[in-house]
Length: 135
Image 1 (cartoon, rainbow, N blue to C red):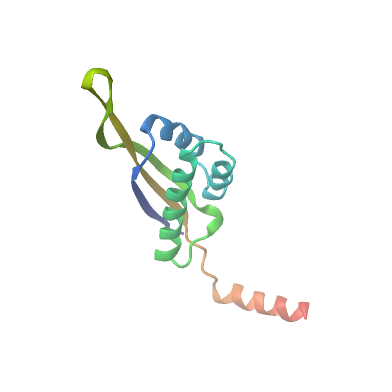
Image 2: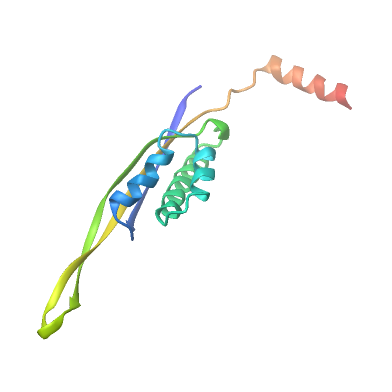
């Protein structure tokens, strides 16, 4: 059985990287099915973006490789980096403008899955006889 990988890269998430990284650390090195359940029940705003990135990588793996066992798909890497910063200004007294930055994040997710074992001719024949016996 061979392992297959797929990636997803989400850019411009409107949340600070340190906040997104807290959520990403909850699901690091877990199976995708477990990670989705954890993120659905996490009350942080960044959980939605991390879940979408994981589901996107999962969909990429299943779309590109038809015979992947869905139970074996796990998150191999999840990395949160700083995205672009937008400079903005707040009006202040005496005609001044105080600068601040809106910080965004980039989320990189890589998932790994095992291929299903191909049935040999003998196993396929056994499966057919077992189905006939059930009927």
